[in-house]
Length: 614
Image 1 (tube, rainbow, N blue to C red):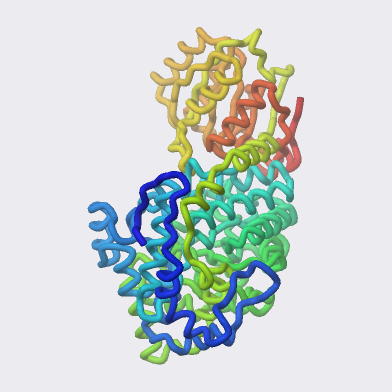
Image 2: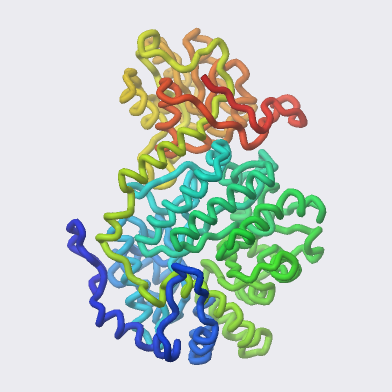
């Protein structure tokens, strides 16, 4: 099977039936007489007897490998670009994904855009097939569980032309469980068509802290029950498309002021507060049949007084998650390269302690060689038993069997073309997003803008790097969408920290416009974005502000007569905001988090549920 294709419409990257049977002969033999484990397309469950027989034939080194999910650079499993070969050699000590599989026998591979894994749909399918072929061609070769972070909104690894949906907080503003389920179903179908079978979504954290630097709009909101309902609905959607979804980050990352990528955050909830605020979405995910749960690199002293991060905490992962909540699915760590899990113990101890705590999958260690050998040596030295490894490997193999990876691990270009970024999927994403745009302020009925009274628009503001593989920048997308809707709109990027000269340039440009649309991004009391908006207001021109990330910006800009919240700056959310501005659709979203007063954070300026319409 080639690792690339001619790319013609409908072309297949599926190897011959004979090639598949030859590559999987060792697996099917080990699964014993009576056939392979079948995909979970019905009520049947994977056959543990066959899976245990398979585990019994594995070497210790193969068992250790099955526990790891690792990054790898390159668009191809066997022929990546030279720069990606160099990166692989530097970080992993191998040239390609195929070499990594041969050396370490990893059970999973995670895709990232920055690792050049996700250039376009056909390439992604070819990479997935190349990975499967490389693994299944090894002695006792097993299919690989390919995963990614496709949360939508500000975190997604597969970009256009795949369908991109609004992020979680926007979905929370829409408040529709049906929409959340549809999002999971369509997103899951598209990922599966690309050979990606495990998605690290949905986020089950309850964002009760507006200052949270790492979760924020990735959360459905601040109300535990609403978050729980939407998490469960999205899980059901993914389940219907036969994708493993992942609730994260247990035991709950919603009330931190630190980013666990950079340091180890503490959450000081009491046990009762945790049960009321953080636990409900995870309980709902478990009840909905969640396939995997991701740990958080956070300390919760009330749950584990040792102050170990949750990823390494047996009281949290085994005592609470397994024993109290009754969860027996796969537990995957958050990335082991994050500083939150590396501050207390060395990289050689972290994977061993995670397994002792109750983890099944070790995600993306900074050094695979160090982590892999640490687990191997822990078994040889008696700190870990082979039986403990077998317990986690069984869970991982159950997931692979449920997802159909033993039955057919490959995908086709024809399947990609039938599924990924179809007109129907894109239209559904637009409709869902239209139900999320939230109108916070509309004094004097400034919105919707009239093409007759205000035909000429200036679009200014923040242009953060476009997320999720969308086109961007935000001001350009807004201006383009408004022009398509009949306005004459000009974009002028002023950035997240405009200088005095930039502010002056925007004010001068406003003189030629009938109205100004300004995109704001994480405005604070001292932000020069505030100066920009205030000086635009001083021109006397109508100003419409659009908070393109956190909805809290409005508290710092009390003079704005019309304020919208989109919760992210992806194209689909910005285009929906343009349709609301133009009056093509009515705003229907309501706040899923409270917006506190800037001068008195203990008081809500706009409560949960606030949202205006036309």
